[in-house]
Length: 516
Image 1 (cartoon, rainbow, N blue to C red):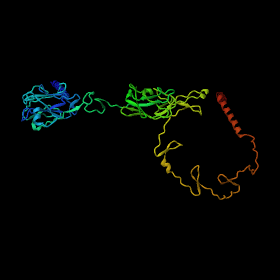
Image 2: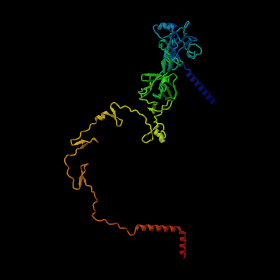
Image 3: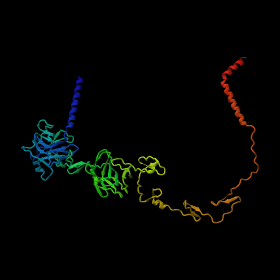
Image 4: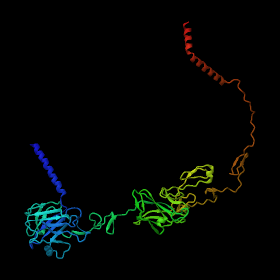
């Protein structure tokens, strides 16, 4: 029995949970908060108050309000691009025409309805429903003896009564009867909102931050792509027209439509032809004829890539005196000349031409990026042409080191004057003592004065002095003691080796002698 009760309890619990979950999903967003069917003055002084219980604006365009099966109001818009929006948490009251004529004579912004029935909203019983633009019931309240409805109460209203939802914020279904003076109807909150982005689903009464309005349509904001100026050939061999070119590189993972950009050379603008596309991680090349521009040969101008929103995407520094068939190229983020133009390909550094003497000598040409050094005949790497950054206003460039030095620091250095008995050495810049003009004292006997230093030094002898005693000849020893030791060592080693080799025979001989 207990098991059956437990099973029934679990089933009831699950069923209740399902009902609650369904109710939470199906709760209305805009509810009927209050209904007045009459007041002490007239039975036709009526109103219905709606409330947006959500935290977002609700578009109520083409919704409708019904009394029973009769539509008493349609929230229709005057223009297709205008929507009727009820702000989050706001109320909106719809009055009968008689109520408005009695109490809202000089007011604006209210909405009215008019019933063709004798009594209008009937106090003892009735049903009011709110439906969306496709006829789905958003909320419904019935009072009195009305039959099955979503929100039903047995309360009845009389003159001066207001039927009010007790907990509209949490969308509760419980109502109460209050006096007319206890409820203040609010109106004029259902406002017109223009749909500025009619090409986008949903109401856009203001242009979103990520969109831009062009005419009557909203489009995604334009963001310039990461496109580089890569290479130009201002002075091709032969005829320039049709052979000069400008190369760009698309440093993104998506194709770029270059009609959103233009080139600016000096004060002139050059748009790209229609259909100009650079594929992802690829180069794009346009000749001078395609762009309608002319690249100067001697004094070049700064070339800029400008996006349609006036953003400067990239800038190429000016060049000078372009040699024939040498392109001005970006190589390792440095602009430099190269004698190997590479339209639609990776840029290559300058390559020195191999001289005739190299060919006669049988030398192989250097690899790309190297040249032959004249002094050694070896291949050396071509240095990148770097542009020195200008010094600051308070600096100058040293001719010896090429570095920027402070003008103020150099000006602040003042040499201290030498003393009266000193002079400045032009080689070191230091002060030295001036030699006395008086005759120096004579040197001692056997010494002389050094003309370079002025000091006395010993006179060097020009011959070898005789010794105080005669040299004796070296006598040879009659025998060498060291030699005898060497002979003895060799003999001892020979004896030891012989004893080791004949150790077995000597052992036998010794045993025989011992026995005897």
